[in-house]
Image (cartoon, rainbow, N blue to C red; front, side):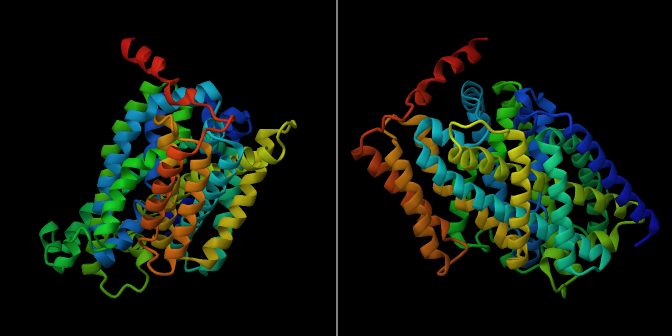
Amino acid sequence: MNIVDVAIVVVYLFSLFAWAIYIGMRETAEDFLVLSRKAPFFLVAFSVISTWVGIGTTVATAASGYDTGISLAVTAGIGGIAGIFVAAWFAPRLKWFGDIYEAHTLGDFFYRRYSVITRTCASVLVVAVYLMLTAAQFVGLGALVKVWSGIDFEIIIAFSAISTVIYTAFAGIKSDFYTDVIHFIVMFFVLFIMLLPIVMGEVGGMAKLSELPSSYFDPFRYGGVSFFIAGLIFGAGSVFVTMEIWQRIYASASGKSARKALVLSVFVIISFYAVSAIFGMSAKILLPSLINRDHVLFVLMSKYLPVGMLGLGLAGFMAIFISTVNSTILVASATLAKDIYGTLYAGREYDLLKVSRVSTLIIGFLGMVIAYCMPDIVVLSVNAMFMLLILLPSVIGGFFWKRANAKAAFASIIVGFMVMLGFLSYNPNTAFVPGFVASMLVFIFVSLYADHDISENLEIVNGWRDEIFNIKTK
């Protein structure tokens, strides 16, 4: 690799770490977790985009494009559109909840609406899911650096994990918001302005892609019709169970500001899904014998980007991965610190900022172990996010249905998880479908026939209505 590219990577990453740690050392626990609930519109928009455009949107979609064509990109793209617009509709309500109850996590909702035991169950599942997503980020970053440097994958995983965990422990969400703006600009320039025209020129234009087998244009090829339908359901319901979105809505200056930011972000996110699939399919023509599909995007960058642009692209990708893993670690560490540790030490004083930073170290180490044991980006990314569907009935019911109760939420999570585990060995790509169906049916049945616990807060169901009315009439 040219010395110019190396220098760009080193300077970019060093500047990123220095700036993030500088900001992080000046922050409070509220800054670390939700930016003191004052994030302006443009910071929220860029943060949503940069967080979403991580491994699943770029590397995993390109890898899937190489193997199966447009299927994963179409499912994720349509699901993303549905999810973002539902998020925009839901944002004022969730912002109201976060402000009124000083919420930081998804577990805070289960605690305030249902009970301590449901918060614990939901929080354990959230930590497990985001550990898998953290591992996926480590695998992706390791694949990038291996293609660039040739260093052993295992060594890179360890280095990536240690460096990003230290970064996250100091940076928090405040630094993440500010650096996301720079990451987005760099990645858009490298992928859309530089790499896409070059790759299209090498392939022979978009018309050349149509010569691939017809199966590459089958939207159901990746996981079948059930996976496609589940993808749409999850996309529409993702806002209710994806804690990165919750954190960014919590952090927004207002519900209306969060809504505008989300609507803006959807158009950019969809373009990243599309271009990643195009890169994967182009690589199938240009590099038909590629051994590792996870390396598709990085090999294209290494082979076709000129000196200087390659270094900027590598630095930008590494920064995006760091930013995304920062978000996944923060979700897991905030859940561990507040919902699990906080429950164990209920009624006793503790330093939330200190515990959150220690939790990042624990989550980072466990994510590194999972990355070693399961180094497959697509499997980690897809299965992790769909596991969260088990929480969807409890969250939607908790916000909108007065009959929803703590017993139903608890039974729904436990049964849904057990059913999903039972189907994992049968078909790991669609095991979440019976798990979600089981959780939904159990939730509805128990809600109809069980009584409310005294711990439940039914005001959450309709307490936001006056606030929404005030927003609409202002």
